[in-house]
Length: 407
Image 1 (spheres, rainbow, N blue to C red):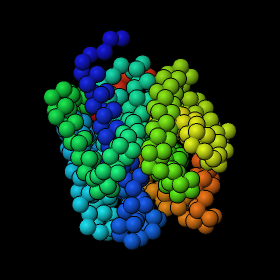
Image 2: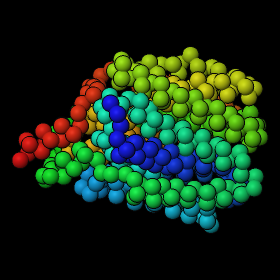
Image 3: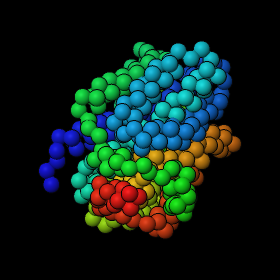
């Protein structure tokens, strides 16, 4: 099926929105040590900023998801991107650790809104048979953002310092201009807007088992991603004493693996189904663990990181389409983002927990990473087989049926 220009623009906007959101988030994980030195605190104290960002993301998913379900995906997405860009810039001017923590909590609200709104817009717009590969592309925005942050850290950190890293993060605001000019509203939302729809609480109550299951699943998924990414630059700098340039190169390699994994397994899910593809991707992590967490030398570590992120983001690459397909039509901009970010809330303790595990074991960050990654890989593989699957559902037609049933 030939794509329309509207479908292409919606896909690009959603991908860039999540890429630049992740870019702003990951800029911070490279500079824990520098912030700790400036404010004379421990790295674990600075890591609380990430905990707060992750913990506030469900608030953003709820606020912006409801706005998108009521007023449309397009305008909500523009407001969301502008807000997280401005808050990223403000973080560069934080006069104290407390001020930085407050700003990162507010950033979490803005960050939490973008994924659900963007994924709903693109999944409701593109042809159903393209959803698997586009899901992989959309989720590849997360490692793409990490990749951009790695490049910025490697090229500019020595010149602009940790505050300058945050200031670079205002650039995503320019994406709003592209969306305003080129992106049209979701056809499924237009159908749903023709009639009053049930409230959020009523809809969630009618889908209670699905909601609980999705939250538990996304908690495991968020432990999987954050458990293998957030502490990784610190693992390289503190445990292996690599310079910023080497850290940047390894981070670039791992994010290339993440992008490949997301695209490959997203496309693969169109052939064998969403659940089977997620299970296979998650279990790849187990044989990779020793190379990833316990090897030495930049080359071996880079290879381990590359393979680990094929697993992690391979599983994640199917999540945008899977959550949107199983979501109730009435709250598609709210449900996927909300369950995703509630999973983030329950997994928000991960970074702090990993730093404490490492400290209790002689600053062995590799051990802390391996414990989390190994356990959740198995948990995801088991959980995913108990869920339902609606691969290829026609979202616009489904919305019409919902409208007809409530008329």
